[in-house]
Image (cartoon, rainbow, N blue to C red; front, side, top):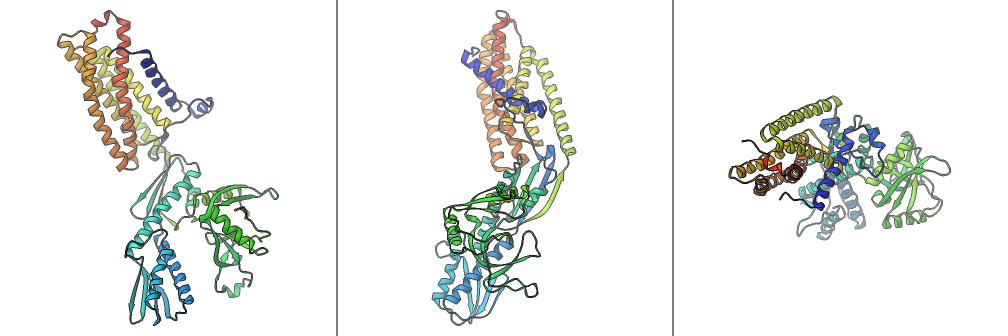
Length: 535
């Protein structure tokens, strides 16, 4: 039990050295870390919002806009259906997301076609069995058509999930370290950005839906500010550069942003102005090629969030599925637009409900309080172990110091975020590691009282304490895993440091202290037998 082969010794030493190496950047300045060779680790432990300050945003997905858009799509499809089938109707209007009209020409066949419209507006929310997404109420040829509550609820759930993923992609593209992005309730999203004191750029990115469309400019009429009315099938949209300038754009979308697979900022080789180059997928490339091929010589509007970014004239067919957007951008604006297009369009606008900035003083106070608690607890444990267990206690204290360094090393390696509850988890790790050593040393005491020599007492003490240590740590690990998967935010940070501390504690308390005692036995032999643990 006290014998360590060369391979085991090398493995133990290597583990400790790697832990020291990964933890080292946390104890020196950033300039010194930057001077390290590339082969050495440079990661530091990321501090959470409660330790280093930052920004807190509470967003809400505009669910009313989602449903309104669906109703408008249904309205457009229904009017097209009536026109195709020559259905006469009167008193047509939209009231509270419900389409209302009167008609004596709605047959069972037409009702079936109306129900089928839900499939084209369901966004993969397929009808299940006999259920339908659309409800038709009829009373004396007065009709009310609306989406079912179940369908609306599912649309909102999907939209919030999609918004969460797109928000995460947009923020990750900026390189923000360890953002916390979580869902709250049915339609809200919480964002915590440690170290970011001015979140204006983040808010600008999140405030844009980034719905990109390519539409033809209606050249049959010119915009007249005195008669601001667009022909049927067209709409009036402002310029992104100057909202006073208006375009008349055909409503039909030739290509949508959902077919984009990549967008990158760059510079026009001729004018040297910032641009955004984009590339479509196979389907988008085919649509884009067909649209440009059949409309050569016509202006093609690039519309972003209801504003015309640019409207270049199509000089030739673009069959490669790629192109570029220019619009008097700055380099940062081009980069942000590329981020938005790569991340995808939000299904609905995001409303900022709450914005809070946590000052650095709070973080400094938290760190100082955590450090003081850890230092006081650590010194008390060291003194206790030395007073009670003498030499063995000193060896356990050395292992305890290495244990803390290993925890920091693992946190740095995996770039985990350390929060105030995480510091509490580290302090708890100190107590757990000492608890294991106390259990081992008390077992050794029992063996000595029973008349065993020191070597046998140490071997039997470690052997008999192992099962108890494993049982205690495994149950704690299970609790930590449950906290990790079920909880969120700071509580999850606590579970991470606790779980890491369990593994390092078992290693240092059982393996490392036994290794130190083995080295002492070899050094003090034959006097090792005289090493006593006082009662």
